[in-house]
Amino acid sequence: MKFFRVIGRSLRDSLKSVGRNFSLSLASITCVMITLIIVGVALIITYNVEDSTKKLKKDLSIFVFVSNDADNFDITSLETQIKGIDNVDKDYVKYKSKAEIKKEMMESNDTFENIMENWDDEENPLQNIYIVKVIDSNRIGETATAIKNLSKVSSAKYGEGMVEQLLLAFNGIEKFSFVAVIALVLVTIFLIINTIKLTIFSRKREISIMRLVGASNVSIKLPFVFEGMFIGIIGAIIPVICVVYGYYWVYDILGGKLISDVITLLKPSEIVFKISIFIVLIGGIVGMLGSASAVRKYLKV
Image (cartoon, rainbow, N blue to C red):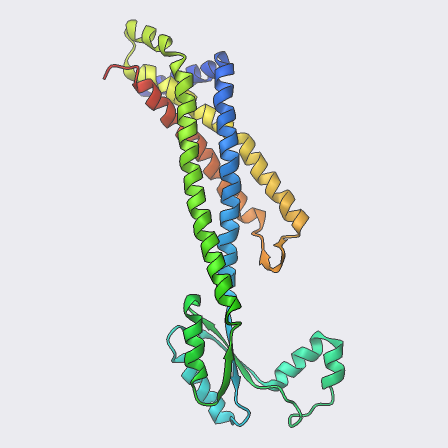
């Protein structure tokens, strides 16, 4: 029971202290707020870059064009050979006949329909294809080469050249975003801790008086630790609001996509909650650590 009384009294005193020293607390809250807004924006960018990279890698396919002289047995045999190649996703090797391709093209465009409607199987110049997905997108080039060397394959295309450049760019952005977020979090921790230390430093006399009247280290430290936590949490409120409503606004303005349908944004419901929790935790935990570190200097161990 004594433990809970100490915690309750410390929480009460810390809230009163935030009010009594509002000007000092406001400086700390402002510092927390600014740094956490930057962290929130960086996290949104990182999540979206990571998601776009995953989607790009997932959608990469090799289009395997079957030779025109291949019969039904050759086509069936070719599928088995493709699935036997290392790095091929055996669950996604899809066959499309030239008749199916013709039908899809006619349904997608009126011009194609007018051109192709009188084509019979003999006149159809299209080729039967296999659409193949890979397990490791970084090895798509060597996989396409292995497929191309199979019998009854006329060519294997995956957008070579452009795909490698896109993968390289996205991987670079993904790594840079991750490092940037880590760096920003570390800078945020440093700024918050030092700002709160300045707040505690200005009250070192108060701590000395508490020591002189016989207060224990725990009873002195706890109110300051909780005060740091409240400063961190209060400072995280505006960043959370900015991140949540700002991302919803950006998502609506851009229609959920960036540049084109190829690069889409994550739905706000998929990330804003996780980012909000992270921001609040960073603010609260770092606030507590900053206060504990600052008070410790003025206490005799």
